[in-house]
Image 1: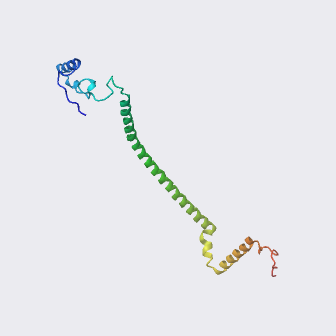
Image 2: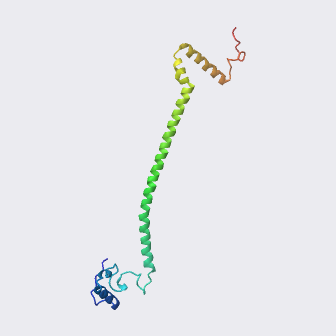
Image 3: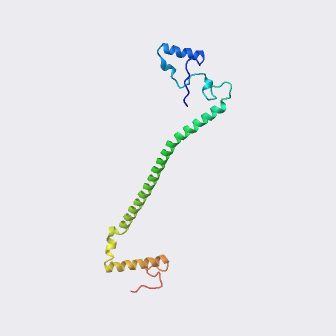
Length: 162
């Protein structure tokens, strides 16, 4: 809040002579400060009042400064945290995509290895190979069920036909 300027002759002698001396030395800029001309009792705050307890006033003023400073520094910190969280989320998503691609590539490689690079699948079109494969599948089903082992003679109730 702007303080009204007081004319010469209404202030204490020390301030009057200081301002007159500044004018005589052609240094008028020295008198233009943020402090109002006049005694400190005119400043409007409790800080400069010797007859008042200024502690509550100063505490409230400093708490307000603290809150303002905390708010002004919290915003950039929150912005940095938000950017960091987005980067972490993007890295996690990229990691999941990479692992899924790696799993797919490994499964395709396993399939091609087990399938003799696709030749076994193509051979299923030949009737003799398809019949032999079906025979092997049935034998493996019997072996896994524990009923017989057709590859070893005399392990079932059937005797080999000679």
